[in-house]
Length: 117
Image (cartoon, rainbow, N blue to C red; front, side, top):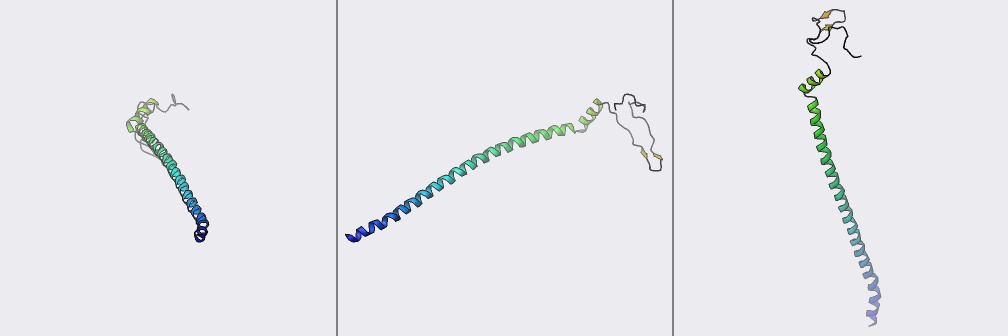
């Protein structure tokens, strides 16, 4: 049995090496799996936050659209005391006036009264 005794010590380092390699491989796999799971949780949180922000953006866009609608703008202008301007009049570079100037309907006749600076 001397030949068997010589094999046993040579086999032990190999078995230890294989066990260490398998153990380190399993440990690495476990760490990678937990890292992927953590990334998955972060991704789901970010997707949830993105959905919330998208909903908020759409609500703000609808509110903006309601303020910029022509009827809403006309109502707000009347609340501020503005009146429709009528037909425009142009002063040309040589000083001539193109169009017929007239006061705005419902407004002051150009006296400047009631106009805030």
